Length: 232
Image (cartoon, rainbow, N blue to C red; front, side, top):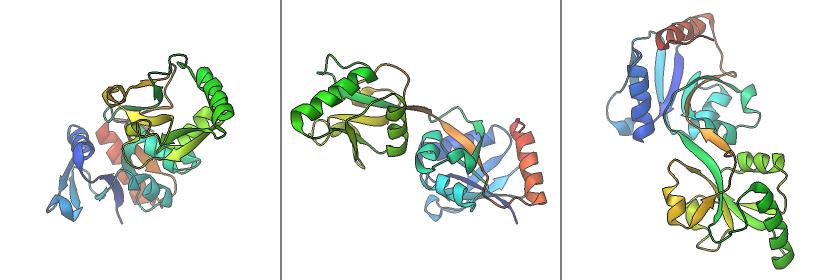
């Protein structure tokens, strides 16, 4: 048996993950072409590299099919109910930073806070007979955040494409989406509401609470933690 480490299978997230481990003496490498989704580990015996999409990693951790995984903290919280019962955060990795924010049209000059959004949503429903639509891919995170801040009279609509374009396309009145620079929001004449974001995301190394951890697996994890430079 070996400890399975799931990492993103392509793109900058994969490259940054490989660099992060490599800088700490654990070399991750593709074996064969990138399309084969297989890899190798040097520096820690008993550690097996599993290449998955970033969106698959939370599910595989929660199912116990992989022991460790690198993915965005936003994806774990969005895809896993009671996420902290299924996985544990071992280490934030310092890259892949992005904020999940709520944005409204710049033309809404009187809407700058969540309280303003709540009032605007009530007025919108009274005027139009249906709830204000917020387009997002992050239903769980956004719903919990708005509930905590007392915002009502809205509906979440699913967006699997370019979320920022939904307001211009008149399929939503506001959006909730991940942003790192805000450029795309500004290009679509949207502004971020004041206050803390829904979630500040970054790439994070997670441990599965649901995987089977044998004594030898725990020894591999301890060796990995020591090599990476952090404890429990």
